[in-house]
Structure formats: structure tokens, C-alpha cells
Amino acid sequence: MSRALSACCWLAVCLFAPTAASAWGYQGHHVVGAIADQLLKPAAKAQVQQILNDVDTSGIDLRKAGPWPDCVKSVVRHDDGKFHYEVDPEHLEFEVPCTPFNSARERARMVDYAARNWSTCSYAPDGFERGCHNTFHFVDVAIQRSVFDRNLQGTNPHDLIAAIGAAVAVLQGRPIPPPFPFSIKDKKEALLLLAHLMGDLHQPLHVGSVYLDANGRLVDPDAAHKVDPDTDTIGGNAILDGVAVPFQTINLHHEWDDIPTDLGDGATSELVDAAKSVAPSQGTLDGWPAAWATDTLLVAHDAFKGVSFKPTPPPARSKWTATYDNHVDYLQAADAIKRKQLAKGGARLAELLNAIWP
Ligand SMILES: [Zn+2]
Image (tube, rainbow, N blue to C red; front, side, top):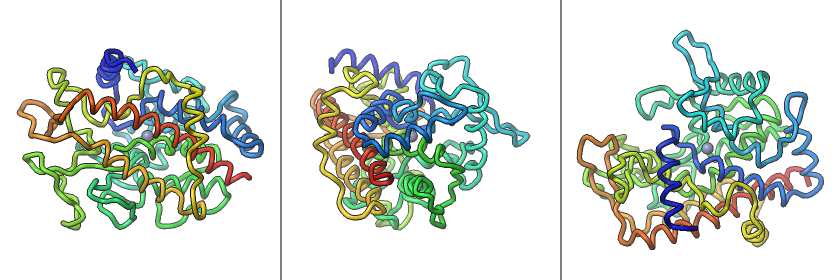
């Protein structure tokens, strides 16, 4: 990746990114899906093709499916309680990955999904209710931990790992295990979710998080047995990139959402080869999502290596600013981590689907 190009891209991504955390930019979700498309065995490939393409859609593969839950973020709830899919005229670029779903019936599907998964939990990170479905994309486990566990702070019954479990259950024709509050109405919805969430699961800042005191020192929410909201960095969204402070818009989370520009938005042979050499998952399928979360949590340890934090002076909206021991080294390490994680995401999405439909 060219350093200059990547800096440009980060700026573009961050200026135009939605306020809610969106995980890998849509290119990352395309890449993860495209790798999985190549690694599906015939039975799973046939199922995926049939489920994603009904009377309303055609030509949808896992690559195109990947961005769907981010497209759903364009569904807004009006004061009268009604839900609408709204295109932001100032951000038409948000619609680019959503064009496969822009028919009236597919928009209606997104509205229906968002409405069913809106009030099942409260999610208002900035004071506005954003809809429970926005929580399906992440967990915020403290990076002091090394093993994912559902009892840890930063997990909840409607988090990323629970959502993957729910989508898998629907694809297997099983009921969603209680107490998880998901409404997934059919296999198409489940697969649209899973294709995306397996990407999110491999973005290190969607799993591991830092909790910081007012001076930018690490605090441990598990030792306190609760998350103090004042210490919550919202998966790095509340941390400005110290190198980019003049722009006041780039945060650490969004930097990690962006992928190396030379990867484009498909499956390069480099990444397909890397995906083929990802070690097969151990144990039963039910345990895989938590094991993968542990794996990503360990990667998050590396993502926070060589970074420290200090309070951001007002009037910046973000509380903390990241500074780097060596920024060039950090970017280089991040580039390598992203390639590895995209390959793992694609490999494991395919592994999961091949296991569901052997
Ligand atoms: Zn996401």
C-alpha cells in the first residue's frame, strides 16, 4: 500500500463516514464476502445462491451481501414511530454498496428488519436512540482480557457474537436460543447478516476496546464490575488520531475500518491464498464464534501496541487523542494485520457455511 494513497483514503473515508461505527468500510465487507465466495464448496454455494436470490433479487453473492446491515443504517425512525429508508442527499456515496438492494421490495425488507430490531434494546451512544440492530456489529471487551467470555464487560445479549449465533441458528432451521432478542425472519435475512458480521468479527476494534480515564490511562471495567460511561471510547470512535488532529474528524476506529487501497474490493489472489492457509477451526460449530472472538481480541492487543492516549483539548468532540511511538511503524503493522484479518474473515465465513451445508 502506498503511504500517501492510504493517508488520502483515510481522510476521505473519515470525512464521509457515517457517525455510527460501521466496521470495515464496504470495501472490506466486499473483500471478505468475495474470498468466501471462492472457498464455498458446491453444496453451500448452491444454498447461498438460492437463499440470496429470490423473486426480489438476482446476482447476489456473499460479496454483494456483505454491506447489507450497514445499508440498513439508512432506515430512520420518525417521531410518529414510522420507519423510512432515507437516502442522504449529501452522502450519496453511502448508497454505492446498497444498489443491489434499492428496489422497493428490498428497501421494504430493510425497513421491516430495522423496525423489528429497533426497540429490543436501547442503544443511544450519543444521546439519540439509534436502534438495537446497531449493536449487533460489535463487542467492546477490554484489551486487558485474553479470552472472550460472555460474562465480561462490553458484552451483552444483543452483541456481535450473539448475533452471529442467532443468524447461524436460523440458517440451520433452529430457533434462536433465548434470551437473545433478535428478530430474523428468514434465511435470506440471516445470510445477509452473517456475511457482514463475520467481517466485523475480524476487525480488531470491533472486538477489543480500550477504556480510559480522563488522563488517557487504561482502566479495567471488569475489575470495577461495570463500565463507567465516562471511560468508554466506543470502540475507538471517541479517540482522535493524534497525527490528523488538524482535521478533527479522523478517529482510530475509522482508521481501522479502512483497508489497504491495493486490495480494491474483491478477492485478490494474495488474500485467497492467505485464506486457504487459515487453520481449520477446532471443536463444534457452536463454539466457533466465541473462539474467533478470542482470536480477534488477541489481535486487538497488537492493534493497540505503540499507541498512547491523552485528553483532547476543547472544543474537539472526542475526549481522547492517540499518539504513536512511531507512526510509520504503526501504519505498517496495521496494514499487515488488516490483510491477515480480511483473509481470516473470508476463510471462516466459508468454513461456517460449508459446515452448515456440508
Ligand atoms: Zn458492521
